[in-house]
Amino acid sequence: MANPCILYVTASSGDEAEKISRALLEERLVACVNILGNITSHYWWKGEIQTGNEVLLIAKTMDTLVARAVEKVKSIHSYECPCIVSLPISGGNPAFLLWLKEETGFGAG
Image (cartoon, rainbow, N blue to C red; front, side, top):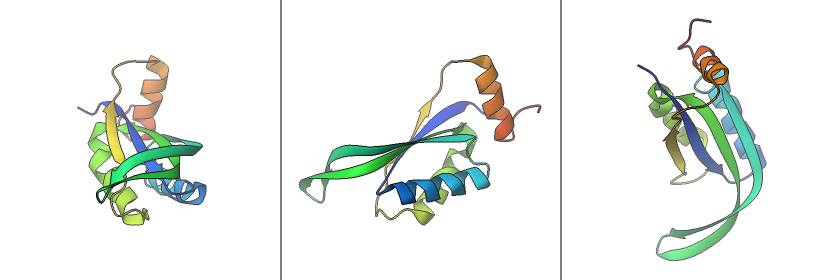
């Protein structure tokens, strides 16, 4: 059984975030993507602490689509090792969760 989840993805720019968002939506791997611009990230990379400006994508999908969505993002992402993580949705607005299932092909709609 498919369960709703969130994909948390960072991108190098607004243009890259838009490209990723569009690709995921066109293939119905996600039902919705929120793009939050201009975040500052601090992280370890190749033995050094780095700081950079990024754009955050929050995508709503179903857990059974995560592997395909990760591969799609990796295929177009500019990073060598992009941040793409999945978080389960344990509850929420039942109407929204039904819409999410329907838009990703798992509902009765």
